[in-house]
Image (cartoon, rainbow, N blue to C red; front, top):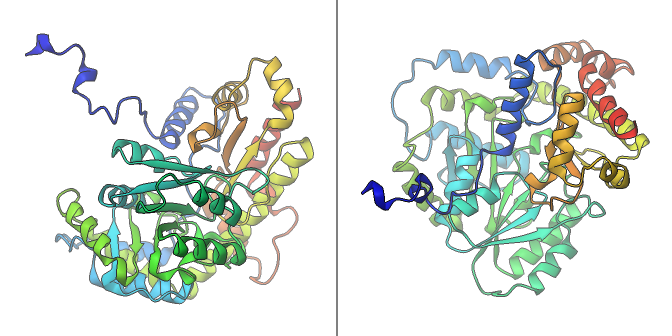
Length: 433
């Protein structure tokens, strides 16, 4: 039979051909390689929380290390209750425990959702790197809503309305994935925009996966869930990776409205035939995280203060040099637009976001992720910066010596996040040399 096969490529599912390793993981691996070679690297590529997992949650994991049994495919009952209460408390949305699904990271849950849902997938550009590759693996019908710098890289009611008017098959079932505070942009949606987007989605029968994984890292602690205004058509995605600093624990959550439980049921069937259930000790520990309390709230308050201060300082330096960038509202990302430097970069042979990031990394050690990974055109000179390359435990400990109601001292960011500031200045020097 071997002689009938032209190449190993013929044995690969055609929907996977042409795809590479996730861009975020690839840039992280490349950064590690350069560090092992003795080079200084500013690791702004992978969006991983710099902060430690809260002590309360770590203690819960230690206590539950003895938990060894397979748990229900939908998740530990106590955890589903805690997640439902979390959304009722934080988002003012009536979520029932039997409408919560626990998965090994929200990425896997997004994949299962795209596998089970039979209809069009709508993605906002720029958007998280894995939404589209997952859709391609599954051979789903994909549609894009392309945002702009002027729209702060987010979905606006006008962009959504214009898209809906031009749909080729307006009666076809559709699921839109919305992410805010945004990855890759650190910007969020206002209450007014959410109300209008909800009304449009309802009128056109569009289901929405509201990826709110960075919701608890809104820099002012004032995140608003879309589900408040469109409860019957919104699935809320959350997890432990960002606001709880536990990316490697791999625990994600989906919260469904009662009338969409049919979709949860379908995902649970696939989960039962694939990953079976999420690690038992992690689920027991996660109960403590989602229950919250004074210690968790204090942790979040300090993390928000540090991220807001650092993000704003980075914007100040970059904007003064001519880089187009918006003030961060949540999370730990900035989406940089280098269009003001296009002529100068073209003269250096840099005509795409990939070339820009590769040359920047080689010349300065600054690792950014190219805009094309977020569904932007290669010719658009954009890149994502994850401003997380600092000692989170040390910064958090120092912030805790300052009364909660007080702002961080003027020299705090330069003292505890100095590597990020140095990396930003390297970008500026590289652009202006």
